[in-house]
Image (cartoon, rainbow, N blue to C red):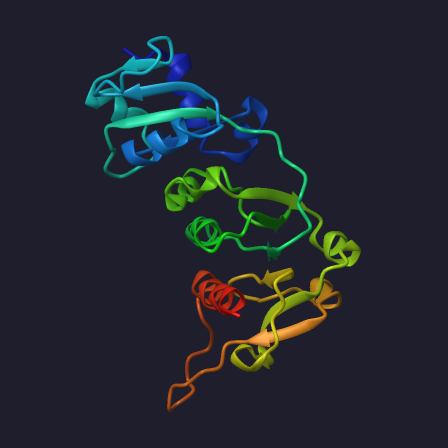
Length: 239
C-alpha cells in the first residue's frame, strides 16, 4: 500500500513549483523509464506493478489500483518513476543551437527535444516563459530524448544579445530557407505558437528565414512550431 505522504508527493509533482521545491520529476511508461535508468539521471523511486529487477530499495511493487491513484495518464502504464532533476549544465556555444521563445505547449516542447536529439543538436535554450521541460507531458513526449539534450532556461534576449553566433529567426516574411545560405554554427530561434517571435527577441535576430507555402490557395496561416522546427533543422543539417 502506498502511504498518504507518498501519494501526496507524487501527485504534487504535476506542478512546476512543487517540482522545483522537491527537486523531482515524474516519468511514466516502461520504455521511457528504462531509457532514463540507463542515463546519467538519478532514480529516486520506481513504483511498478511488474518488477524491473533493479536495486530493491528503489523499486516498490504496487497494485494497479494504487498506480491509477498516482498516474497522470488517463490510461496508466505499468510503471511510474521519480527521478531527481539534474543540475543545469553550461551552454556550449558551438555548433547549431535551437532557442525557443515562449513555446508553451508541452507536446510541442517534447517533440522539439526529440528533434534536437534526432538532428544532433546538443543545446536547447529556452526562454523563461517556455513550458518547463520536466512537465510530465513534456517528458512523455520526449520518449527518452530529454536525457541526451542539454536544456537551459535563460533570459533569451540577453543570451542572444551576448552571443557571437549568427541568430536565425523563423518568420512568415523571412527569406526562403531553401534559397538561404545556412552555416554549420548559429542559433535558430522558434517563436510562440500564437504570436511567433516576440518583438524584443526579434530586435537581436540577424537573419529572418521562412518556409514557403506551395499550396495553390496559400490559405494556411502557419505551421505547427514543432513541424516548422523539423523542416528548418533538416535544411540546416542538409547543407
